[in-house]
Length: 436
Ligand code: SF4
Image (cartoon, rainbow, N blue to C red; front, side, top):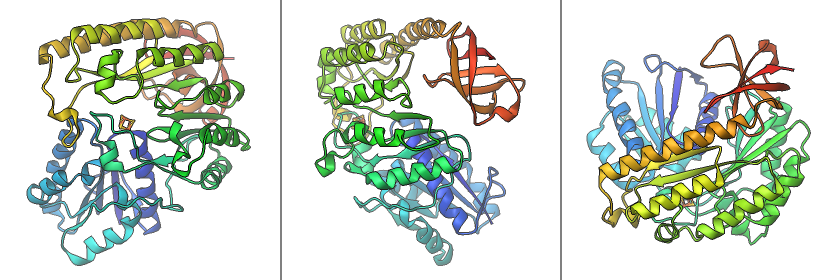
């Protein structure tokens, strides 16, 4: 029996899919990439933007003929999209070939839900809410030297544009001992780099009344033998503490790389977004981070075309890009999400204006990214080798401390090792080097 899990969306979803795969393996399924061969197909979905929804609905539609050919095929949908009632209703009425719908809170029940769907020959739906954390689920890590580890779930922030608190629930931090145990066992399987995940890792432990718990957790992860690199995301600027920045600067294993979502450079728009920081506060964090870690790699998220954004507000965003000089950014055109506050607001700008802004943002960032990459040229950097390059089979590919891709010639046996590479050439999105 074969099963296929397709993931849409963020690293949290990748991590959840690894748990679903782990449960499928324990149930006796073998994993496949081939939809035609699969007896179970699960889409783990994202709700953050409208085009994510469109992609999932398109993919669901395309599975209809497979179900007609193989009536025993179970097609399931889970994740953030499935957690929303209006989406579950739409799937129920328009996608009759989908036999299993379960939300983010029901992940741990997956094996019994799947068995119900197989045995009952009728649709199984579970989008109930549950604020517990299920520990001990099997995880199908991909066997590489890098792994994602969730440290907390949910979000309390209710940014006015964001659906996450509605689909992932309130903040729940995993116990420190469970996280450390998971990372220790990963280290024993050859994992060298962990990415700690949470919607806002700076809130880690606050639901238990703890202070600076994330910085303390990081220090403990640094003590695990075999773990050589630690990264984390995301950090909400309103909660980031000096203690965390100091910990990053002090601990060699914590990469000097910080993803600090800005969203907008305009204090007025930030207020409308309910972000709880303004331009000045954000820039003061960046200043402190650069003082403590002069080589820090900074990345961010930007939303273009938020309903109240004017041309002047957008200029404020561009000016922060010039001032901070991010290494790269994740930028998106605003997309209203049903149920959020901002979805009820009229757009201050036309679609053409927003598209033109988006292009200007990308053009500026490309120039900055290239300039930032040039700074690596001539340096010898530690690279964690992930294997053959996806774009050039003659090359190996890996990541430096800044999480930038470095391609170089070398033997495939270096995969999984951290080695020295001299950076010889920079491009906007990639670095090239030579093995030292
Ligand atoms: S911090 Fe804001 S943007 Fe991030 S997940 Fe929470 S509500 Fe969404």
